[in-house]
Image 1: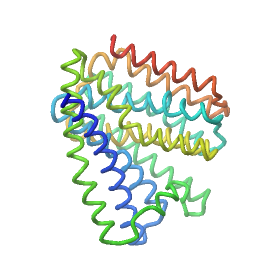
Image 2 (image 1 turned 90 degrees about the horizontal axis):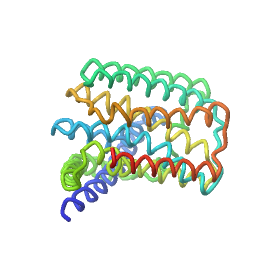
Image 3 (image 1 turned 135 degrees about the vertical axis):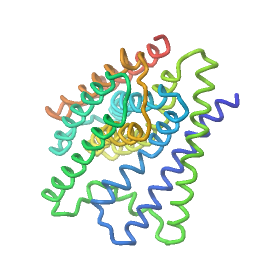
Length: 316
């Protein structure tokens, strides 16, 4: 029973600490006059990915690469099938933003490159540098396109609610940031310990736990964001949130982790899960490029596919 408390408690702590870190950092950045564009591209993007980064790095250092890679691959699969499937049950989702279309194509390209790098058997420092270089290109390209479209404001890259909810008091902002920075590694420790113990007890691989339980847990912020966006009839926000998260999961999390420590790629992920990730990413292309509507029927189909995938992961 303790291992379940460790996993669930660790995930909750990661999500809370990540949220506090983002809010505190946004408040500090705003106070020092950093523009919304930079805040959106750096603090928000990296801050919301902090739980996944902590889990992947800690798992890699503790010799459980299945969780390190499974967390990212599983999160990207969940982001498409679960995080976009659920809001479609509430309201029809449709993409109408040209920027999201180009980002979706880039996400697909990044997913293919990542899969090719994984087929080396090990994600090493060379792979990490390649992924980080692509991240640098993506950030630079986003800055350029945002400046051209928004006359340097870039406010669309950071949630206005997040800016408003950031603490206005300097002391509180510093406290949020410090608590977030302390809470993240603690949450990561409990999550990895709990996930590893559950895998041993259930007789499944760490990769299976990383691909499912841990991945779903770290995808909860994206799920909440897309559900709220669907209720507010902001479908472009929902799709853009998923695409951006998937890009950062691969380039930032795997890039940084592989640069620090070599990550062996488990055979089961090579043979099955990477292909599911590519297939789910490909599902985004007609949605973004040809404005295919995600209706309730299609949403149910996506959720059914995800349920089958979860079953296959544990039977694999």
